[in-house]
Length: 177
Image (tube, rainbow, N blue to C red):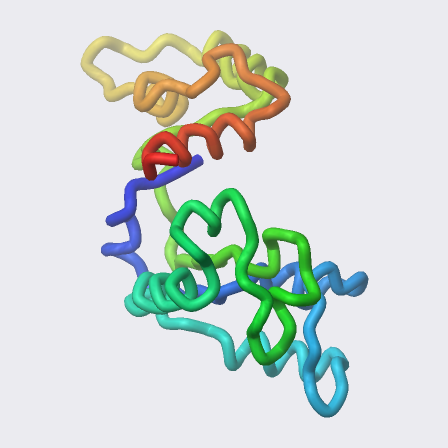
């Protein structure tokens, strides 16, 4: 699911300029060059030191784009220039090393989505659940599932195994790539 750019207005939270799961995963898919050692404690501290307050993440994101990418399209389609102190960009070819992870402390309603897509089995399950619902009386509000399915339509109504790529294509179109 994607949400409008202003969806953070009603939230508190934080961001980091990399995927924290990749940083702390036992296999270390996000590589770093930390001093004096690259141990779990140093990685955890690096993660904590990299936290950006939610109300500042867009400013920091703009600074990272300006410092490490030739243009905004390179963030999506390329990779950063590899000259950062910890080697995050130099040592990694994976987008997890430079994707911004934004976390809300409060839930985000799926009803507020701007676009969404799912695989075929999820779309079938949603239709099956909708068919199994008891009919609501005309004066009653629609169920949460009915509201969801009557809201912003899925990008692929029957679903697709490439649902993540399909959402990514939608985002590219929105930002002019």
